[in-house]
Amino acid sequence: MFWDQESETITRSTLQQLQLKRLQDTVQRVAQRVPFYRDKFKKLGITPADIKSLDDVRRLPFTTSADLRANYPDGLLAVERDEAVRLHTSSGTTGKPKAIFFSRKDVDNAAELIARSLVMTGITKKDVFQNMMSYGLFTGGLVMHYGAEKVGCLVIPSGPGTSERQLMLMQDFRTTAVHILPSYALYFAGFLEQKGIDPRKDLALRKACVGAEPHTEETRRRIEQIYGCDVYNSYGLTEMNGPGIAFECEHKAGLHLWEDNFILEIIHPDTGEPLPEGQTGEMVLTSLKREAMPILRYRTRDITSIIPEPCKCGRTHRRFARITGRSDDMLIIRGVNMFPQQIERVLMSFPQVGRNYVIVIEGLDDMTIKVELTAAGFDGQVEHLSALQKQMVEKLKAETWVRPKVELVPAGSLPVAEGKAKRVIDKRSL
Ligand code: DLL
Image 1 (cartoon, protein in one colour):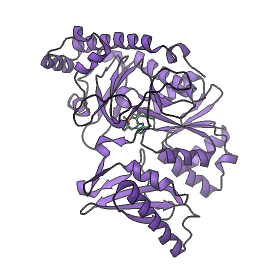
Image 2: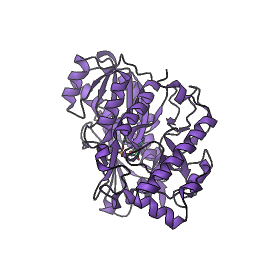
Image 3: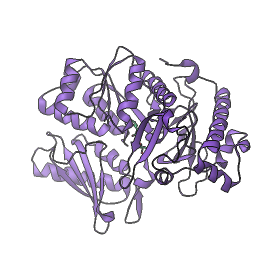
Image 4: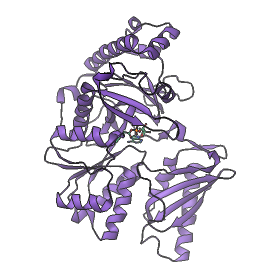
């Protein structure tokens, strides 16, 4: 199913012409209106007229999250302040957030991209769509909401709410599709279990869109199995609209990036050099249609690779692989590099593992992984637990080359974050 078949199946050559035209317009606009970019162009000795082909994107400067913070609150605005109709922010761990403005056109366009994305997963106007992400400065609430309304779904703006209320809404209105953080989907499953609710029988869910935080294929499968519904990976970031930038189609084999709206590059995270298609590196995005606050070559820090093969679904917008981590999330333990997702992949391959885990690093690179087990997994038999623990340590060692400590704990005993899950507590950096 398509929302906008013409745009979604546009030929590659027409798409590239469109990208070049939009890139030239964007560069022209920021050169005229945004002193930050004007100065950068001057330093690099380039003018908008130098952008003659798509490859010339590489001549443009990168934009980093530090640049956004340095220009807080509105230094990168490319329209008059009263042309902006919406503000979202993306917060880091410290200091001021990054403030991202939307014009009316930007709001409509973001909704349009969400509509394409939801319809691509098979969601239709017949669906009851419960948006369980936070409404407010975070884009997962409002941006997704407008898009789901555009599709014509009955949208329930439940926000993160309490689990009691989520369940009541789900049951009373027969919710068929949810938008949910993967970590919350796992946590909510524990709540349902306590309530004696079987999600496969007692709920009407058929689709779940999960995103906003890293998660593994194993976690997706687990959510699908618990809820008996199809789960689609959704990627986005506030700087580029929020959700709806890239989404999986019905084949669930990588995320289609809407290339008529963004230019995708993969670069080496250390050297900044472009990498050939198919190689893993840092994703860099240039917005092509954002009006209020266009951003050139944004260093997302997200690690992925482009999937060069065309997709069976017929969409011509290229896919990238599930994000394996952020370059700034990489853990270095005793000189060995690893990503938290490698650990999640191993944990989720054990059926006894429940819904929450946390990685604690302290002292001289001592890594302890605290893992909740399911009620059945935590059967109180000491021999079972110590055998399981040994098996986990061995598998983790094989995957990461580091031998961690593993602590098995009962369901519900680890703290749960309000929003996105915090999986790593690195006491070395405190
Ligand atoms: O998380 C936007 C969003 C909302 C996406 C709802 C999907 C669903 P930020 O809060 O600015 O925006 O965080 C963006 O989150 O750079 C990634 O590191 C991470 N991220 C987002 N989606 C995924 C995903 C929203 N599907 C940052 N897989 C990004 C892995 C993701 N990481």
